[in-house]
Image (cartoon, rainbow, N blue to C red):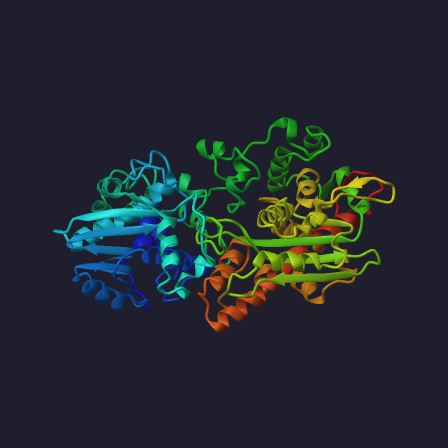
Length: 616
């Protein structure tokens, strides 16, 4: 069901005290719609349910808010109860507590967090002293404490945080599917060992009595939770919103910039004066050190002065040698924004090695998952699980083939063994060069080799690491990290914030469109479906279904984990499997496209270094 407007819940309170301007964005964005939780949230609730197994008389409330309120009230009349998703409401203030434990007349607010903690760490949480993540946990607990004490003023109230044990090793298979092991004593024993508890009572009470400036906006600093609630509900709150300026919290705020769905907060609330590019903030400048500008009251890129020694491309070029430095990229961003002359394309000679790599070329992408609940016997919390790969192979005769694998089983079984078998079955995988974007794939192979060696199994994957020679006896590493060469030797004028695969793909596609070459990189035989997807402005959005959002490694991981944890219905499972396959295939195909773009660009210049100013 939908909550009526005017309700202050956990999320709204925490976000509002971090910045008063977030209040309107959240209340007007459909926050209180009754949609099922996204995959990441479902996995977090699954972790909560794993902890709840450790308590007595555990019960789960309904998804329906009103029903959950009644259930919570009734179950709190029992002598002992552990209520998952307990909902308390007082007037227009509401909280849903992960687990609310009642033992006699004592109530305990229980929160479970994914941060690893050693069992030997202190069992009482003291002042977090600058730790923002712990302070965030305490802020939520303080809000929940406020409502529990408001509704049950005569009950003693505690707060406990639970964290996965850093040194935990599972003695059973598939602990992540604990719900399938009903009444299994060994699974129950493992779950008890998995979690470390910390008494957060005094720290929560301190936050409840006085909100610290470390975690809240200055308008709320020093107030109690009750004082903050009164301020939010007062007429004075509108005046406070009008006086809010740009602050440190703006850096990571999702509301700061204008999007297709909403107008940006800065354009709405702050006078940008003569700023022509108000959506280009200093936080999007590549590299570090941008906070120095905001510390001096400079927030827009065009406000930054460019030193005289680097105020033209020719001068910028002289500051480097064989590589394109981060600082040079930053200056080029500023020059472009100030509408100064910048190259359309700038590529260092180091990338000229691409055509010399031994073929076939295997453009490969792995997907991995880490979760607090281990899937395998002998595994610990957050041990990586490699659940998918996609490989586009460019052979000596110019043909392009695609090989892919995705673990679709809900049971654990021999996941890494299957991964290894399928990987080794890629045609000619032990020949030529494996092209990756980041060191991740090679690191994964080494991790798997060590794992198989410990288990006494075949670790033939070591053959993928063997160094091969080319026709002129030059030695090449089997794994070629294209991201390293992009980072030191490639620039185009559409590059802005970073150098990730998706960001580089976007800039390459924009450059290809603007060049007038009609995307010649697609002339080689390739996947017609992938070509059509990449021709769109936002290829990773094209592959989505109505209720999915698998646009990066984290969302792909959480979608697969939800499947593995048994949290998807039949239709969701079908959609997720289909989109995961397209997502990973798009990543490996994107790597192929970027590679071919670089190869073809070198054909445009008779010099080793490519510098182009005009569209081709």
